[in-house]
Length: 493
Image (cartoon, rainbow, N blue to C red; front, side, top):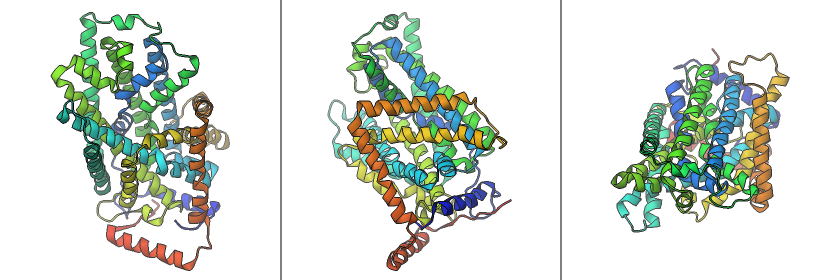
């Protein structure tokens, strides 16, 4: 990291915005090569991870009835779509990559923006990569082991291999990352369509007695558990906020970002609701609550010997979600490097492949360490409080900019009531988190605030010892030669 003041950071950011206007093929810049299909595949492939195959149990467990659980799934889809549309306006109004890091930086300053990246590094992205890789590896190996327990070391080795392949892919080729995302998105949606179609066949055959119970409680649940149901549902929808992280690489972003988000979230919400209906057609609430993986239980009951298709669908969903998240996170780190929030090397791109190679691979060692950690899920739980708080702050940028810059060109606008609805709901989730898990939230807050001294020591502090500066510069030069990367050219049209 380089030393800078808050004003220096914002000035550097303004200079970096010229990259978004660079001519394609001119200089060392990331190219605009992701169209509408790539945007849809990215959102669908990132959002649909393991959640829809596992979360239905958590939603039902905290609602108690089939009807109320479906209401929660619809409400989570609507809330996620509102948040995604707000990000679409921000992404087209502020046409630089970086997503909410960029919006927070432009509005609330470099320290808060750095904390957003810090939470990504310590848990939001990295721990999620590890969990998704382990889940994907588990579902890939289980069909081969039958009733036997898969050895932990086998799962860890396969998970590390999957992670290595995806990190490598994002390092060498943007087009191939995009193609893989499209392929995996089609595969995972196909797996979910198999569940939906088989459920419809069962309904046609007259098997819908489980749905007749409606809002009759299958188990006794106290009202204070309802927010936990939303937690499970929102987890399955998470990932909608990452499309604007690579705005500078999207063709015609003022059209493709809002259209891609709208089509994707409509598809995802519809698929999620229909999949849950299929689950309830075949499985009773008690059977769902006793299952560790609802989709697999459903597959074994309905598909019989073809149940392995569901295992493959879950694995592909996890891998596709990792691919989309790594693609997104690399762009956040790249933009953070432009404003001296991250080391200079992370702002460089590969000379031949035009990929943000250093930013794409830097978290790989961290994720591998988390892979062998005994309780990565606890870290994700700790950071849920900070994640929702920072997302609500990012969405608050929208009404603030509407007020401060009323005449700014906005290619896409949402009704002003939508960001306020989302902010209130997000803050409610934060408040419930503090009430229900004060210790976890306290740990999460401490982890988040630990980024403040990291920022001031490594980025803000200008009086670093000469030996430290020389060592850091030598490392940067070595890595630049070793990785064959160079700083971006910032040319204005």
